[in-house]
Structures are given as C-alpha cells and as structure tokens.
Image 1 (cartoon, rainbow, N blue to C red):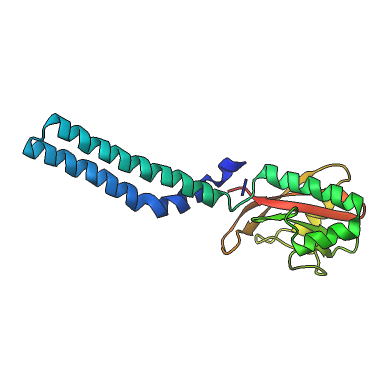
Image 2: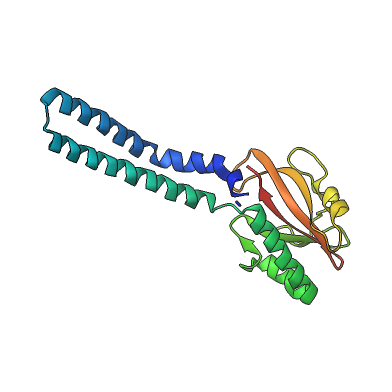
Length: 199
C-alpha cells in the first residue's frame, strides 16, 4: 500500500463494490424523473428542483466513492513509505542494533504500518527480525513462484545502498500471489528489508 497509483486495481474493486448500487440508484432516479417530467408536463421550476435533488444525490455518491477508495488504498503501503521505513531502520540499527532488532520484532509503529514492516537476516542466514519468523531461515526462503528469494536478498544487499528485489507473494488474507518489491540494504552484519505490493 503506496507508487499510490499502483493500488488502483484494489481501489476500484473495493470502493466500487461498496458504492456501485448507490450510484446505479441515482442514475435510475435521473431516468425516472426525466420520464415523469416529460409525461406529466412538469413546470420548468419544478423540473429544475428535481434535477438539483438528483445532482445532489450523484454528488454524495461520488464523494462517498472517493472516500471509500482512499480508505481501501490506505491499507497498503507505497514505495515511498517503504523506503522511508527502511531508512529509519538503518538509522536505528546504526544507533543500537540490539534495540532496533527488538523494536522490529515487537512491531514498533515506526517500523510497522499497515502491510509494511521491517525484517532482517543475520550472518547465519536466519531471520533476526520478523513479525513471526525469527530464527527461521531467510536465506533459504523461496517466493510463491519457487524463486530463491532469500538468496537474492542476501546477494543484492550492499552497505550504504538500497536495492530492489522483485518477487511473488500473496497479500495478507489472500492466496493468489502478486508482484511485490523488497527494498534491501546491509547495515553492520544485518541484511534488512521492507516490501510493498506493486499492484
């Protein structure tokens, strides 16, 4: 989640399903009112009032659509947010590595927001920080397409640089894998990353 334009598919899917019936109702009202005015010869002033009411209905529906779409989109981080989180993680590890890793595992709000979170691997190849995989192998991790994700993360990480690793992974609560990008760097003896979904 966000960059933000990459979540339009979700935005439309979530917000559209919620508000499509409301918009359809407003359009049907436009049609019915127009036919009614034509059939019964409403006075111009009455017709204008009807049209004002209908425009108001459409305005409310469209504003609601925009608001709901923004709420849905905000559930997922953006590339800028992911990179900023990783940069904060770099500073934290450089200041106090043990305290930083503990904060990453604990889900400190500085290092976990919506679907974004910091994870790290130590020199032994195992997760040194992750919401649920600490102690398990990061280096042997494969993505949902069978690619050697962990090995690529370790190979790509460089001190003082942020590189990108693209892989396939499902969104939280879903099963179909979609394209995801991890921003990766090396800090001291730690390989740390933050990933975001591209779609």
